[in-house]
Length: 230
Image 1: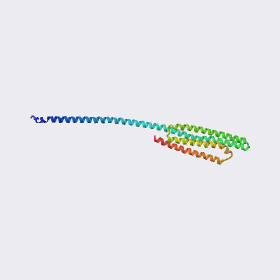
Image 2: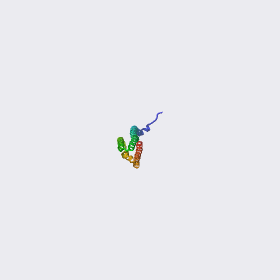
Image 3: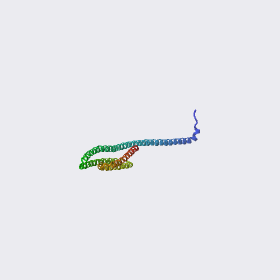
C-alpha cells in the first residue's frame, strides 16, 4: 500500500520553514545555555580562586597575629620581670646593706659616746653618711637600668601604655628622691634621736611605694588587655 503524500505538497514549504525555525531556536537556545554554563564555570573558577586567596590571606593574618602576640607577650613578660626584679632586689639590697651600716654605726657611735670621744662620734656619723650615699648611688644605677628597659618596650607599646610608663618613671623618681632624702638625714636624726622625723620620712617613702605599686598593677592590666586584643 502506497501512501499518497501529494496533499502535503502545498504545505512542504511551510513545514520546512517551521522545521528550520525550530532548529534555529534550538541552536540559539543551545548557544545561550552553553554560554550560561561557560559563564557559570568561569564564575565557579573565580569563586574557587577567590576562596583560596581569602584562605591564604586569613592564614597569613593568623600567622602574623600569632607572631605579634608571641613577640609582644615575650617583651611584656621580660619587662614585667625586670620591674618585679627591680622592686624585689631593691628592697632586699636595701635591707642587706642598711642593716650592717646601722649596726656598725650604733656600735661605733655608742662606744665613742661612752668614752666621751666626740671625734669618734663624728667619725661614726661620717662613715655612715658615706655608706648611705653609696646605697643611693647604687639605687640610681638600678633606676637607670629600668629606664633603659622602659625605652625598649616603648617601641611596641600603645600610646596608653607609654603614658603609664611615663607615670611609672616619675613615680620611681619620686620614690628615689624620698629615699635619698631619708638616707641623707638619717645619720643626724639618729644622733639627735628624732624618731618623729624618721617616722615622717618613712611614711613618705611608704606612700610613694604604694603609688608605684598601683601604677605597676595598672600596667599589668593594660598588658593583658593589649595581648587579648591582638
